[in-house]
Image (spheres, rainbow, N blue to C red):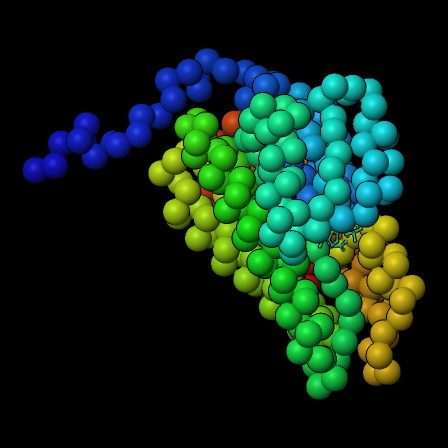
Length: 283
Ligand SMILES: NC(=O)c1ccc[n+]([C@@H]2O[C@H](COP(=O)([O-])OP(=O)(O)OC[C@H]3O[C@@H](n4cnc5c(N)ncnc54)[C@H](O)[C@@H]3O)[C@@H](O)[C@H]2O)c1
């Protein structure tokens, strides 16, 4: 007979029952990197991570925008830094991970939030447009996770990776987004692989799957219009009436879930995807 003691390879942290909820949520001493942090969900996540006590490196491919975003978090002073980098460029990603370690001494949390999206009908989708979205949303997220995980493994005390997917990771929500929807399904798959392979090192990997939210990027996307036959404004209007809560998500409502998953409140959540869509997928 297998003895129970021999079955447990990693003990449950004894201190957990004694820690208050506030303490479990406290990220003081931890260092987070957020990609695509100049606006939208990325900025909302960075803001809440900083509020929870983490040192945060805001990163984005747009330098001026990410510098301005970091400036809006000036209250947290020396715990905020910014860096420019495109997640689809491996050297840039290596530079972002190094920048976090150089600036703050370690890396504990990665938020893979940056994404590319556009609206192109399937039969007109050029191969490079399709592949370009996968480069950012999948390969970029993979390389960020791989490089961050190597640093976390070196540190030896675990970490958390949060991938921002979409309800499109579960079900396509609109026409003209075959590249995006494919990429988000893949990112959810990657999240589970990370959870499986990095779990033994105490690194938890999870996903947040938001529903529609009028972020700066979403507004630009709607304004840019769509190919003939796809009415983007209609799609968004229909989306709001379809949500049982009858409204789009506030970006902060995504940021809050990112902080939860990054914190010890979620200490035993690994390989999960939290859908934050006001019930959209039920409709
Ligand atoms: N807004 C929504 O309705 C919605 C819904 C579901 C999921 N999402 C997902 O949430 C995440 C954030 O969405 P958002 O609406 O806040 O987006 P957004 O477009 O407002 O912001 C994205 C940020 O990422 C940056 N970025 C884009 N490509 C990059 C790259 N290659 N390297 C580095 N930075 C890059 C942009 O400069 C921008 O600042 C994305 O992963 C998106 O797919 C958004």
